[in-house]
Image (cartoon, rainbow, N blue to C red; front, side, top):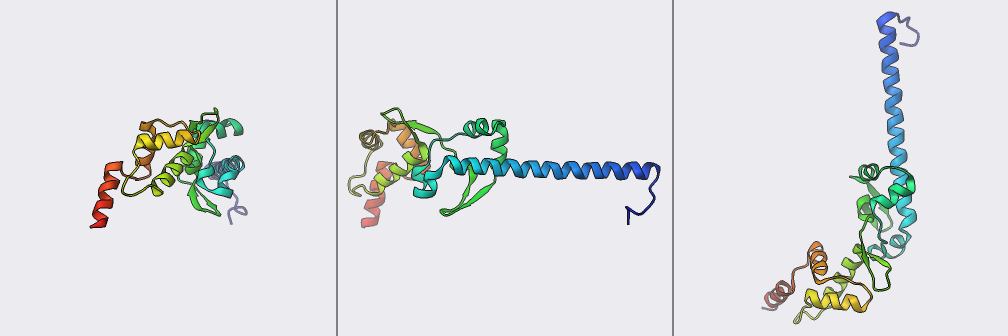
Amino acid sequence: MLTAAKLEGKDKTAWRDRAHEARAFIHAVEERTSTIVSVAQCIVDRQPGFFEAGKAALKPMVLRDVAEHLGIAESTVSRAVSGKYLLTPRGTLELKAFFTSAVTGESGESVSSARVRHRIRELIDAEDPAKPLSDDTLSQLLAHEGIVAARRTVAKYREAEGIGAKSVRRRMKALAGQ
């Protein structure tokens, strides 16, 4: 065993150096684990609605919010969530999925972009296939619900959801009917 062996000179110094490097590595892994757990806990604490009602209930939250709460750099939070997943009652989700930008409602309250995208999908799913809703109409319907989203924003979110434009949806319906 190395602990029982008599080390002298360069061997003793090399042994000490390797032991120091090993302790530093272990410390770095512990710090990384601690950061990931802290970030995940902060996400869980700030997004309780998601666990009760799903993605539509996500609150606006950006990396900066978590970084300020934990007293760490925004880039540290970004690296901590990159490629990491959280097992939830609603499935396994990438930690990045909990960070959403905000859209301001008429009352001045913030609504998460994920909630707006979810609502756009619901409106399109419920539309009359013979008369698909335009992006402008979707924008107006959202406005009636207190969500201010420009036509271009609606188009961007619709495309992000993988939903075609009004003309594409109408053609798909016509092809399906033949």
